[in-house]
Image: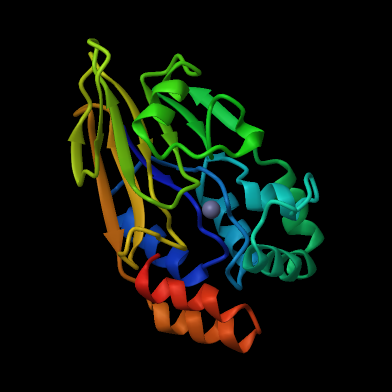
Length: 242
Ligand code: ZN
């Protein structure tokens, strides 16, 4: 079975369309979405609709959670809350009720899927360091925890001896002796200095994880964002992937 994992679409329709067509060429059996369908970008409704149409597991991210009014945007920075108020006005009732059905986490073989962290999915913790990874490994029984949230594709590997290494991998064979936390990167707002969309495929027969990068029309997206009055810093960061 081949599974694709996508995350952090952030209402970037051009990026999502390009990613879905690339996934189609990979002949995957199923696509799972790890959260943040909306926020930052200018096509929240179309993105929610495409995610519902194409993804089997659909998780809530912190931006989706805030768009649903489930928490305040106090901890959001200025541009994030500005784009969130824009998003709230834009979202239709249909999109809101679709988003309300997204889950906070999903645990089903071979994965534990969560947007931010397994310790407390609704606290939106980041897993950026080896120490943070060590703490979160203790909060899951799965050997393959897949996350999004930081928009930086990276893997943490825990060996039976207890050592954790951090790896940015294009391709990784999953060793059943080890445990893994894989950040699948971001479709709609990559932050690893590569503006191309990022997603992951997992081949369960070959135990092989592969990171994919997909080019899309970034200039088209940024022009539309600027025309719609979204903060310029949000469109500028798409051009450089950070
Ligand atoms: Zn995000």
